[in-house]
Image 1 (cartoon, helix red, strand yellow):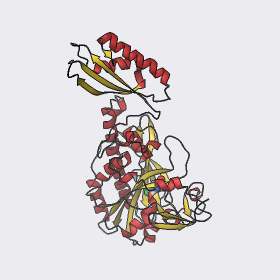
Image 2 (image 1 turned 45 degrees about the vertical axis):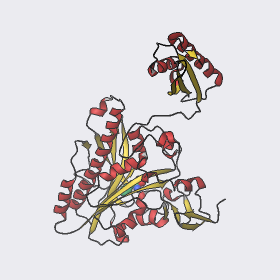
Image 3 (image 1 turned 60 degrees about the horizontal axis):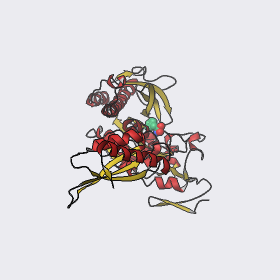
Image 4 (image 1 turned 60 degrees about the vertical axis):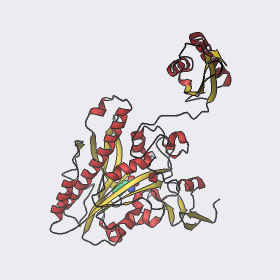
Length: 426
Ligand code: PHE
């Protein structure tokens, strides 16, 4: 049962028989992970944006996820019976409003208002979907688009713009580079063959550059984490495949060869003229658009094993990431730990290095030790005896520990300290 009204980012929506957004999804709309420069999603967003800086793109990162069915579907040419429109795929606020299912929902608005040749949007998007380690009902996309104006000089201008895109040494498999359209993936009548060719090369080179930047960063991070997998030293390999989107023609998808499989990365195409016309752009305009999913790429980049981790409020996750850095996630346990302190007097001429304590603990508890910390050292003012205290946290990555099993391990640690260093347990 839904309340009579739902408010989202300052707007109220009267609920009706279409409403199906549960409260926990509405809460996710307020997290804005892509704004957080110290979160993997925000770090990846920054990394991608960086490559578009200074090239005539406007950045939009603040669009509210509440959009109309017109923006999300109709204006883009989705047929009335498209499965994406169903209540079982999409979160509706009410009959006419929904949580955007893709960043393309803002194309109409951006084409209407954007004053630069291109734009880049980043946003959280929502889909009802299967549940597994790479799917979550909320995820993130970035969308880019670029528009030119027809003129006698158009071909010269696009060719010049292509030159501006930095070169990569990526290996490209593209059966559709020269023959960029065909019956199954047709061009639109309003463009000449050569215009389609030039715009598609600009589009593909832009995305290849972007993918190169992102996956080079992923490789660097994997190497820093100690991976010596051979693919890390081979040139990056991508391939282009044909695709279909109601608002682009022709359309393609880029796939990246990563850890032995082709990873679908980014859908794109040449914007249908009807979308441009609907947005108030004249018949002389043409251009491309792409959309890229951030979450799965961020999982690779940061070595994050489960998409749900992006949404955790656990500080053991948050404190691992900082702006501009791509580092490999260090897993932590979801099971509670058992803390035990150990304090002892040292014999007069014995020095005990931290590492020796670590070694003893590791010998007895192995991977069940989450941390060992030297929390206190002091010298008794009268006797001159030295005391040390260590705090041990026993914690398993995959199960709850019992007090009695930890008693045994902890007792073994104490016995070894006594035996090997002659300490006197306090
Ligand atoms: N919105 C599409 C998706 O979510 C991606 C896309 C964007 C395709 C722009 C073409 C142009 O899959």
